[in-house]
Amino acid sequence: MPSFSGGDAAARWDLCVGAQYAADRYRARVMRDLPGLDAAQRELVAAWCGPVALVADHSRGSTGVTVLRLRAADGTDVALKASGPADLRLAREITAHESLLAPLVPGGRVPRLLHADRERHLLATAWLAGEPVAGTAAEHDPATYRRAGELLARLHALGTRVDGDWEAAQDARAMRWLDGPHGLGARLEGRLRAVLASHAHPPVLVVPTHGDVGPRSWVLDDGVVRFVGFGRAGWRAPCTDLVRLDRRLAGRADLVAAFVAGYGADPRCGDVWRRAVVREAIGTAVRAHQAGDAAVEAHGRHLVDLALAQAA
Image 1 (cartoon, one colour):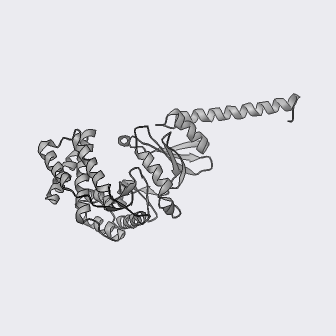
Image 2 (tube, helix red, strand yellow):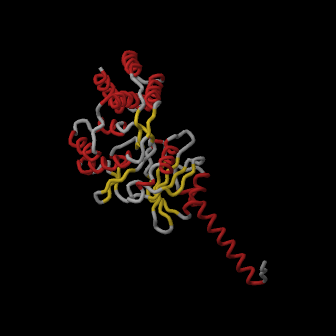
């Protein structure tokens, strides 16, 4: 092992001390500049990405998930998501990236996984080029919906399996919503329970689904639609990815038609669809009631009325 003496040793000691000082200053800056992360998460970001700058905070307070756009020293942008122990969405998103989405990465249609840590509830992906569709003119353009439908068809084509327990599990989940505070009143609750109890539970073909299809989870780049936000991803009946979108687009038949045309088929029929509509209406109304969101709760009540009329 070489030894150093005199000025050479002192210079090397100064270099080591300087490097350690710079590293300590960087860690301290990361601790200070990345909002919504705990100390362990910030340390992990430093280990994963090295020096980063915060470009923007895209978090939505209602979700409980921190979403940051970071820029690394080499100029590349990273999408960082962090949550707490009670959140289940980030774990689902990590699973989707690790086991489902890889075939869509080469075309840039979904984010590329960089790093993930389930224990620390942290996910880093490459930032996708483009602008969010929500709140822009593209949100009202049928061409956007046709392209999104095409991409959803590609996602659904990544795999299929037959699940004999899926229908029963979905009804049990809807019943649990009704077991808690729901604001629907005894009469509506009774009608909904009766409808759920009448459901058949046949084996169902399930596919990889996004779980929250809509403009908030679409990015548009030079005419190309990309999907983000896989926190509700999972294996479900294909039609479930259209239930929320169909209800959100009430009054815009042109947008629904464009989406279905891009998808290549219309799954909004049959018993699986009708059962899914009832469950989604219950979930929308009860989640909003428990969150104290009066506007969404009123919308959910309207969906419940529509679902009951359809089930009659």
